[in-house]
Length: 218
Image (cartoon, rainbow, N blue to C red; front, side, top):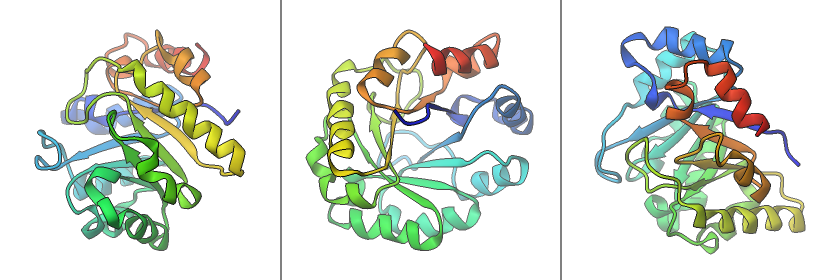
């Protein structure tokens, strides 16, 4: 089993004190900072962009895990890497036939790359790019807003991905994002996910270190 990593979503942070929030994540044992980039077109919400990633890079040594929920991500991935993203994940639904080329752009720019699938997108949509992916992100809610309810049916896709990875000797991380909490962390990890994105479960917890440890160990 791959190492379990916790990636709190900065979308749930208080943007008015971002430096303090990121320092809190470092002190609480987070492994990654998950950056949800939304453009108001691919999803019905707008969050932040390249400048935020650039500024986050200045204040933390934690890996920046940038999840691009945007149209035509191939136009922007290299700029996100230049801004400081360590991992850039892009949606199969946004890239369509350009998914492989977009992942290669990310790799060529010097970052790790990953493919993302929505709850209603089958694993077969990304099967051809699994060998070159460093991460596969399975959405356990429909993207756009934090605080949504976990969709348990997606765990079958997590199991399928873990099985494919083991059968073929692929070493990608399986990340899951949406409604993750200590109450479902065990079944998510049992299915094969090893990177857990959590927003509310970490940022709204009275003790963030305890919340992160609960996600990691439950």
